[in-house]
Length: 534
Image 1 (spheres, rainbow, N blue to C red):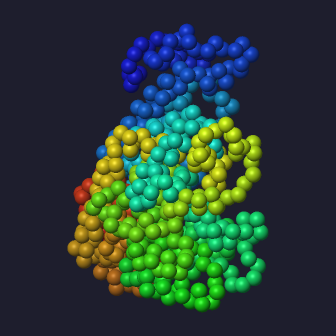
Image 2: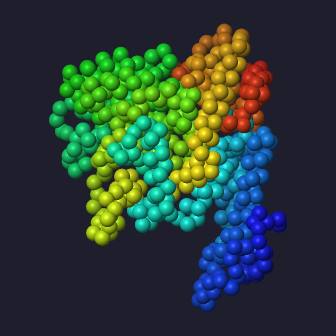
């Protein structure tokens, strides 16, 4: 095996495998094996085995990224859930592997890579999941291998420092003073949105944490963008408000919150004495990528003294782009903001940041007593120590070091990389929109503000069919194309009709790939019997 690492390569032999000594250490410095230590433990913790496995992992990952970026193979493996499960279970059947451990590791990595969806394939145009910058995964491996838990600073000191450094950097892009705001990382947008709305609830009802919601008067509501992510409704259920207490904010003709109608909604709620936990705006919405007009929305919320939460899980990365950051104008007036780095900052999942404009609000979500963990260190002179004890502000106690990848890539390439990525995929969305607009057998629903497009394929025979047949045709068309492995795209429902939906997340998707997408949809559609679309 060719080494990816420089240095001497002395062979060592263990009971189960032949390994190569790491080039950065001397064999004599390896800790002696304890005579009473089980063989399995000695092998599992062997640094030499880790060195060889790490080299092989890097090689296999590089091969996989290269073949996928070249457009080789299927975008989605052609295997049923039952077949995938059977394959995974087959490796667990044996009590232990008796062959060379490095070879077994290599086999497992090959299988895992072969059976996953190929996000780095240029014909992946499906969900809002990016092909992450490959090096980010290697930085993430540091936190995973060394298990840098982050409930308190002492459990993950560098991980927490990295998280806070990034939080300050992103808060600056939001237009906030890092001295007065507060930011933290958490596991995904759903958890971040829940935490922000829990904070808003507790600010509105200071005794709710101990006593629950008020038992008299109209029940409180959340006013949310009508196309808001389903996690907002889920949060309402978890917070004890009830999912029926979501008031949909009316949308304009581009599926953005209509400020005039929002004003009317809040006026009506105030007149009825209904408590308003928060207004939830989107930057951008999941179905069509619509950016809400935050400047007038913020003015309305301020006038009615209502908490404004902006779910910028997908679009927050646009702040890095001088060309497109105007889409987020007014976000500095929000009370809380969510940004997913594992979307438009092109990081591996999960890495989400939650921000509060007023730093004290970060400590309003939870009130906990855990002296074994959050005991005050009377000898500490660090007045900001609480900001480094993440467990005070998050649902999680133990939390993975989620931000190593973003910190590493940002430190290597700078902010310009993220601007280039955003601007590249936005430009590809505009090109696809032009292709759809110029074709008489395709119907784009909205001009994209971001990199999300919804459209329908309507050849003449389908265009003449009833709406139900048209919707069925889009569903079957998508299923057939995905089953072929040629492309991966999805569907959604807009105003009761099924439509095709693409999210252009791969900066390596070419104009030719997008042109081929339309031709593939046409060719596939010609083979669909409309009687199967009922």
